[in-house]
Amino acid sequence: MGASDESKNGEWFGFDAMQGIQAGREFYVAMCPLKVIPKLFVFADLDLPPELRAQRKLRKSRIPALKNYILNNPNEYIFSSLTASVDGDMKFMQTSSTRGDRIGRLYISMESRLLINDGQHRRQAIEEALKENPDLGHDMISVVFFEDKGLKRSQQMFSDLNKNSVKPTKSLNILYDHRDEFAKFIVAISSELEIFSGRVELEKTAISNRSTKFFTLNGIADATRKFLGIKGTKISEDEQNKAKEFWNELEKNIPEWQLLVQKRVTAPDLRKEYAHSHTNLLNALGIVGNILLNEYPSDWKKKLTSLRDIDWSRSNPEWEGKLLLNGRMLKSKLGIELAANTILKKCGIPLSDERLSYENMEYVREKIVLTKKDWDEAKRNRWNEKQTTLASKELKNG
Image (cartoon, rainbow, N blue to C red; front, side):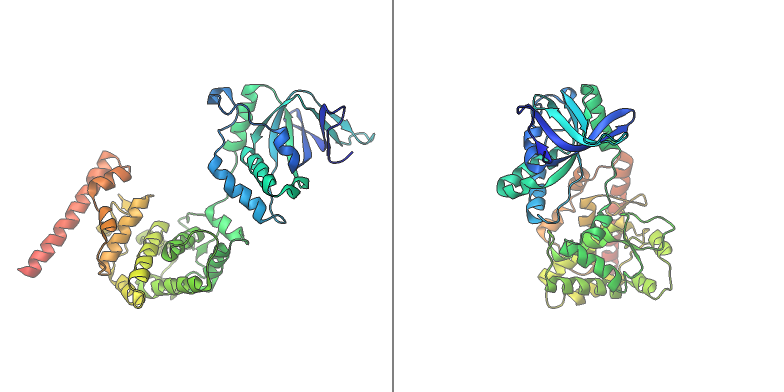
């Protein structure tokens, strides 16, 4: 028999498989041709309320990216095993008489109901990819089959498989993605540029207090994307050169970064006292760089010299309610935009109507979720900032 067949008068699916024992229960790992996957697993209960099914609803928006991943990398794509429960007849026949040999053929009745506990989006992407490239149907994917023990057990399996899985960090995805041109560029400059060399956390998206690192790989990537205004995986040679120039200009014009390069200060001390290693502020700098590059293409570097006069310390009230709240870093897209506005104003760049809209306090209140105490404190800080500015103007005019 082949790797898969419909034997026993067409009543069974048959697969090469291996038998195992896990938590006292038998399970089987089978090699299934991709062309069989849509036939094996048919979506039948997705319209049921969640309490009566053991799987999330299919998120159709995820399918095109997975399908294109298969089609664009027919010789390199890789998928982890699907996990399924079989409600129906299933039998395993050893191919060897040797005692303890667990390799054989797994037969599953075509009348059985099969439920995917993990991998429904992969299953759908496989079906869509086969429509465009049927030759992929001979490729194999491993499927782990368990005997169905009822709805509650299937729901528990889904919960366990998803709750206990650990996704890789954004930084690690960038580091390991050798197919993505942009990712490869970010990894390259993380060691090539002087400001980054030996100072980039390559695995985590946050830096521990005792770490000697100053930047995160994902922080550099996010800020570079904002500076260049690009998404996707491609980056031209001109864009690469512009990005290198941008980071080199930041190094020259942020005094504390200069001290870091000169080894006159340590990364932990700088992180503790200053905000300019944080991903959010790097993103704000990327936004500023993009605006300067587009509006002042001939002298954008000169505009960045104003960065030397900015107080980057965490104690600077100008960052409160934007990047910081009571000394804690805010995780807010709007906070990044507000920080970018602050930097633009310090560089003498007038704000566009769109950028001015971020300054509206009620807009801020809607977009940043704050406690009443935090909100009142943020308002006071913004009010004090405005009053200080007004008083300064009056003194100059007086």
